[in-house]
Image 1 (cartoon, rainbow, N blue to C red):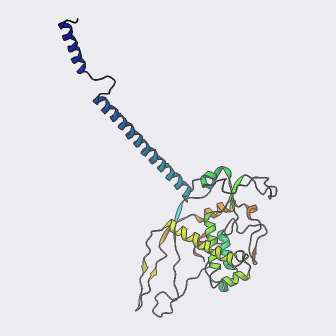
Image 2: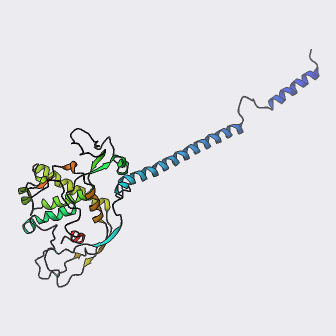
Image 3: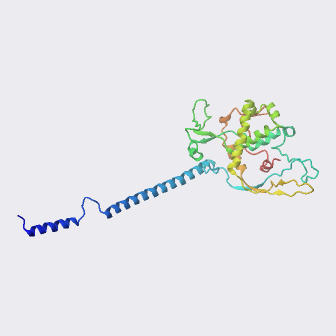
Length: 313
């Protein structure tokens, strides 16, 4: 039978156990620590995601800007002088039939804008001298990434490909047009298709007229759209003032002769002449009055000075 001293010791041991927490249950401090650690992990993961997303956005933006930039840094274009110079635009006087018109009332024609009745075939010689109807260019395959070319989407030709004669494809590359001359062609097409010219160019069987009225309309529409988008893309914000008027009637005219910064067109034209790929468009014919047996539509040295080609006279 247990003594009274043994009973007292048992109760003391039970009281001691009551004062201790079950080691299998976490303490309040332990629970708080684990929650804090979980919160820190989520914060770190969240910040890492934001950082990675931000960096990806920056690199994606830089890559897209590189693809969309008109200032290609490809060494394929190293022969082009990238410097700028100052030019002045042509003044314009529109016919108003008003005796008070201070500007003379005559339209300022030049050799790029004159009607076929006044200019005849000489007009086309000026447009040809710009390099407007050059051949395509064959961009070497190694420069594809510089211009955003994709072999899954864009035509890539190789020496020996079916349909090409020996030597017509000198190296593997992408046939391409240069933007400036495509837009020059579009401007010339709009001039030809204007109401005072279109019957004449249709009679000459000019290339855009050779596939019927609907195709011509789509071609003209494309040219209007490509020039519209280019103007929106550049979104020039230079301010053009109005010239002063005199007499009783004020005829506001913009001063288009203000100086403007221009690329070296002569250098672009020269580079283009040396990079023509004749085989890429060997059957080209401009119209009944302009055909080219060797596909050379313009000369290495312009027939007119660059000043004349800028002014149009």
